[in-house]
Structure formats: structure tokens, C-alpha cells
Amino acid sequence: MRLITIAAVAAVVIALAPATEAAAQTAELNVIESPRERQSNPRLLAFPLTVGKRWKYQSDWVFKPKGSNGKARIDVAVVAYERVTVAAGEFEAFKLTAREALGGTSPVGSQYAGETTRTYWYAPAVRAIVKSVAHNPYLGPSTVELVSAQLRP
Image 1 (cartoon, one colour):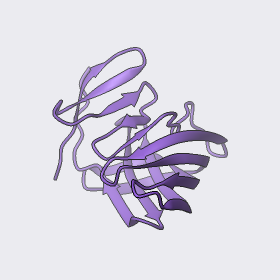
Image 2 (cartoon, rainbow, N blue to C red):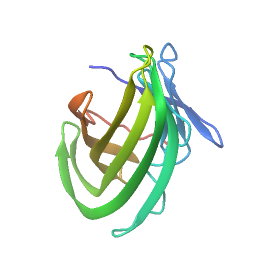
Image 3 (cartoon, rainbow, N blue to C red):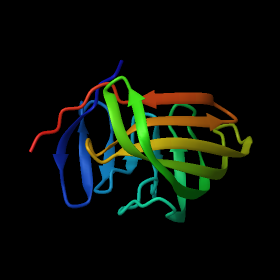
């Protein structure tokens, strides 16, 4: 299990610790860079959230473990406000879905083209995405859950 702590908040970017791993988020909690990937224009969250809200965005991406990169077009929708249970507890959360059309190139020149889907839950009480379930044609399915949370003033 890897724990990441919010170490500092600036006007535009939130730095995460441990500092040995490159990680940064926007003020709206969208991950710009993590140990695994980097995005030029992440917008999985766009506040204020309300059920029925939809938005689209485009972003360049780099998948660090493989050295691949490309572009993505993403459609996001807030589909519900519901209770979700994760290792950190039970939360009232906005349920969002994202459908991503991606294309890119691997380090050996092969082309990527496919669609990923992600369902994720943002809990206002902890100001975090508490669960994310993704399906990627190249990486397979993945689930990430919040395991603990402690808000500080």
C-alpha cells in the first residue's frame, strides 16, 4: 500500500508527498502528474458538481512506465449522488463517469487507439475521489479506493 499526503497548497498546484515521487494536482484536485502518468489538461473534476452536469476536454498524456504518449478526448458526466463504501469508510459522494477516446505512440513506434471508461466517486466531506473503477483496453481493469483520510484545517 502506498500512502500519499498533501504537503502544500499553492494557488494553482497542490504538491503531494513523499517528495521522492513526482506528483502534483490542480486546485480542483485534478492530477497533473503522478509517478505513473502526466497530463497537460486534466479535468476529471470541474466544480461546482451537480447531478446532470456534463463537460468535455482534451489533454495530452504520457504513460511513464512504458514511455508512451498521445492525446485524449474525454466526456465526463455527473450521474448520481449516492452513498459509497470504501476502506476509509462510508461517504455521500457524487458519482461521475468518464469516457476517453485516446490515441498515441509507444516508444517503439506502434500506435495506440482505443477507448477507456472510468466511474469514480467524489466525496465532498473529505474533498477527494474516494473510489475509481477504470477499464483500459491496454492495461485492463483497475480499482483504486481511499484507505484513510484525516482533514486538517
